[in-house]
Image (cartoon, rainbow, N blue to C red; front, top):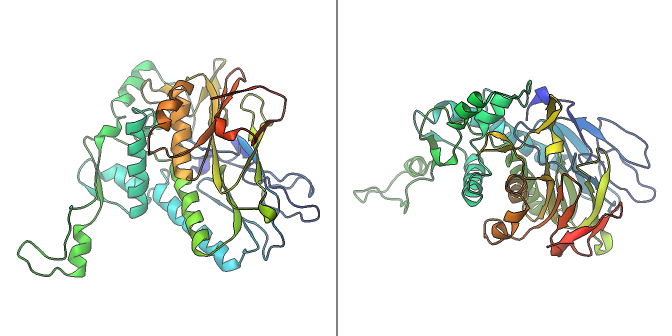
Length: 406
């Protein structure tokens, strides 16, 4: 969501789509290589984390017949966002989808003085702040994952993101600075109130309430237990946005579509004939190379990796995904975590959580109803790969590498 980051990374998945033999269409206005091969787009990434299949998954989609309009691309959420509505690409529907994206960006943009998240960060320590339904859903889910992950996923990581300078001028802060920032990182300091329980249409005296009174009584609020707390929902907001677009596709009875929000990718519906979509997963240890081809449908594919966004100082690489416990970039030994799920917001949170926690925590996370059913592909810093057994027969190594199934 930070325009200052423009050009720091390539969003391959934002615009790499397969087409059938004789149908080649531009997915993004940013860059065109050759009409018969790939289309790439350069853009930025969100301040806290881009769960991007752009640096982690290059997407290749087979075409699904003639379109009324070509795919549409717009720059929002600090990245290139592409939507491809196969056979249902009306101008009005594209307008509706991108309007929804801009609406959500205006809510979660940490770099806008007028956004809802900025208003919450500025005022919630002094008093409860009324928030929109969108904000409430995302923050509640973020807090649920913070609890599930024992704080590995923490929506109050904002002070660390700001301290390390991601989004502006990154640097390695002193240990003293890190310890000072950590005092303001702690999801337990965020208090949500979803309104009075057992709300009725009568007041305490039994008199009928007006519609306005009922609405006011049910306002959802956020407050902070102390000053200095700063929310950053960049690790989950784009996933929620993808899910909101899928809801619109359902409402409009769209049969098939592909959505790429700077790498948070959703393949919706089926290809003609019922075959699966093809998704190529990036190799985190070989820039620009793909390591696996994944077949899937009606699913989101989201990857977190330290290679997505980083800086180097004194010969050492520092990634953008933080371990709130240490105040430093996460060092779980993993180079990337790819989540395949039905819900993009959940996949967003899972990929960050597991990247910080490490491979050994996956069985425990799988037991939680919050995580739902998901599959994953994990690659460590030496290139060793683990994948969940549910992907057997659908995950193909592109360089002959071995996979350890769990």
